[in-house]
Length: 389
Image 1: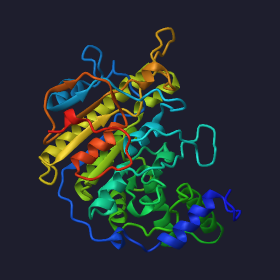
Image 2 (image 1 turned 45 degrees about the vertical axis):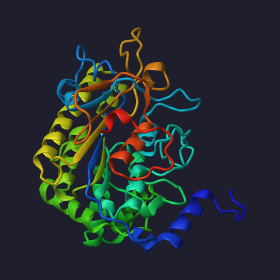
Image 3 (image 1 turned 90 degrees about the vertical axis):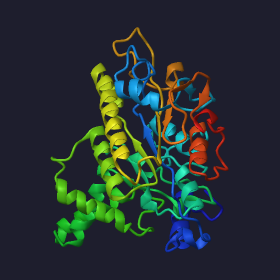
């Protein structure tokens, strides 16, 4: 609580409402246009072990392990360092990747198991948009519908960056918000039913309390969802689900939005928490298949071909406990949950190279900064020089 009696949450709301509405990054000075390389970050998410991903003898991701690895540089001993109070889970790992800094995150509402986190230092999206004239719809996070907390990792609360330089997000949850809002505007309901729908929309948008109602809708994103509705309809029974949906959203975004910097947050392996081993191994295979579709799309698109770098890595590892029925069910700070890997490939990245030294997950942000020729002043991990020509 600050001296005026305002909570930090309400202070942020007031700051956005009074200080940021109507401004644009251009207000901070002219910025050069950006020509590339584009960067696609693939979060091989849900927590995965090295054994089932980059170990050729046991992999469920043969495309990643046996084909893609030859196109680039593989760091087979990347880790999430063993700092005190540094958690190994999905939200934290995503922000370690995006910010290049380990933090002890806390849910903004102090919710148990809540993952609505605010980064204290800028994300790579903010660095890019502050350095270059890149519109927000060309910086994207693509998320799963059941991880709404990750909808809002698009900007930090750093005073020099923040919402003015945020990315956009695509997810089925965002589509539902757009659809409900458009139906209300079209006058589909009235009376008590209209009031109920308005309250439902307010509740959905309130999850992003830092920007709700303060940032104008992006026309490109509005058009994107209109195309999606025309193709898949509004009932959710036709479009793919799970990580296959994320692959489809990413393919659509490459075609219709042409993002310069994109992060797709795959997560199906985490369904192993239901207690079935195949939920984990099948999830890895689904990501591997999706990764192949994305690479093929980039290779076939003149806008991206020969001008795009992929950065593929897990959000976290998983447990390694041979004494239980599902030896990789959890990922909370055991030794193997800190043991991950990263693969970079694309123009300028050395091919068919394996780097067998210990490196840190927080080095990814600075490496992206080097690829995109932008300063990443507040990152704490050094760039991975072996993956830079």
